[in-house]
Length: 227
Image 1 (cartoon, one colour):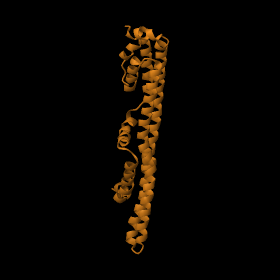
Image 2 (cartoon, rainbow, N blue to C red):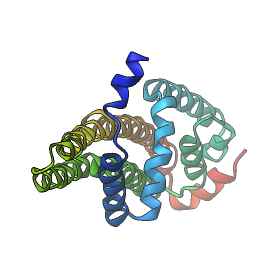
Image 3 (cartoon, rainbow, N blue to C red):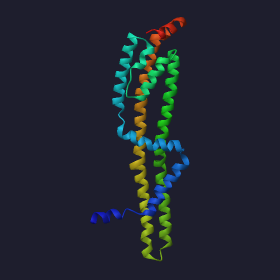
């Protein structure tokens, strides 16, 4: 009972509305609906993402692709299936690319699009981390105004002071303890993921260059149709 009473002292609906409601309004104003969806969906990534395991699995898959291509040809590369959707798409592009230049162009565009999507999700949380302290400061000013307006009635000073202090506390918690760590982790996960994806695409590009680019134009068609 004592613990509940202590916790209840830090709960004020009006202060919560100012900080969390104000931060939500600012976030909606500065973020598109699609980026908001990416930001919330990215929370699932925090729980299940394992870039190191993905990188190891990608290296194994690329080795299997190289072995298959040495036995067959590049057209057969998409017979290697993995649990990674990105790598499956890359292998499909590898099987249909006319040259390493075409594949490199696709890989560059795809990595850039993925980086942009990742950054959009992280930016939503970074925006929350930036907006929450400002909302806390606004709540502090509101609380101080309420307090000074009630100086003639000591019984009404306490609620205004509580709003002033709690909004600052809520803003700091929302920013430093929630949004900023989420944004930082999403950015680190994004860089780690894009690193192994770029490395895998580079290996596939080199494979295509070795197998196809050196052939005369007339032989490329026959090579790609060979079993």
